View (cartoon, rainbow, N blue to C red):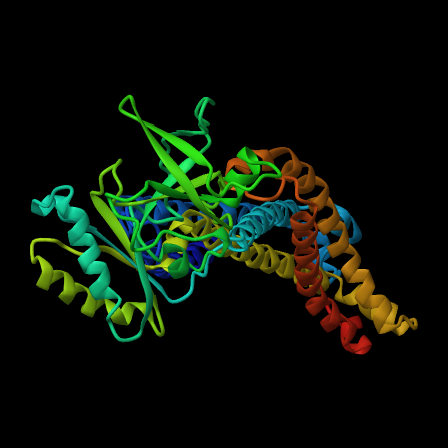
Length: 481
């Protein structure tokens, strides 16, 4: 009979688990759809895996129901015939399997909570990185006119004509272009000062006129790239503040020259401006020294470009108009990788967002299961000690003392769990070091918050049956068998 009940409960749990799994897959698909554009945003259940999971669920229910079922066949008949209270002191003090399972559940819950805290804090640190640009109301999209037959130098004229037309769109505050997104960039060339070797840390970005105004990057000295910086004019460049501090300490870099080495040809460029350092490339990277060059003044010749449109309203509402302008200019050129700057940054954080959400969900699930197990264990022990509680209350024990007597066991179980899980968390947290940013694996705040949440949940789970036990009528308790 007990095994039948266990199998029934396992079946109900398996059915609930299937529903949760389907819901989880839908949530995971939704999360991936906002992630990196190269990750297939489709997640579905594998029926073979689901079948194995259901079989394991039923097997677990039978195995864990078998132990109490066998134990129930070994009842000592004499105390039962004498109407002795259920469960003596000896059985009450003997550590049981239920306590071991509860301790294990609480310990695993703490590990999941610590991991969730680390991932959530990592995501928060990445989202708070100072970018040096205004990410709001900025539309990004890419064009590659070379695939439609456009070649240099005509392709530069084509891109510039489109830029001028984009600026006439009603609601467009400013527009520019670059050879790749600033936050997703990662290009390097041999750029150096005359007479000095190239600095491998220096990066570059080909930009169009008005780029710094569009991205709202302050110009600290000189000017930015302008319309009159054409192929036949003086080769110019704008350097970042970091490049200026590194190569021109306590000097005025305006009017100085830097050298671009390409294909054994040196191109001399005059520095006409210094821009405030903005984040270049992935958010986990340190900001490198950057040189900004006009996209149409030589090498490297423009191929695909990214347009940036600063808009007065929702940037995505301008996509249709931008597509029509490109189609009118050349219907063979597709508009690709359309996104806002905010979405572009979120795409870079897709792994961190997914890890933080999934680990938090698993931590909450583990905590709920641990609290249910703890609540069941404490409730069972309260039921077994009903007569004892009645005697204590009949002898004058206060309700607070009865509550603390029950909660003492909860505190002991939680303390044992922490004694096991805290060293394990400290010794294994280095395994996720590569996923963290701006913090150490043994972050004290994450560990303290996880411990506080776990203890609060455990005390709440134990307080409910403890409070119920303190309200027992002593006369009823004394007659309890």
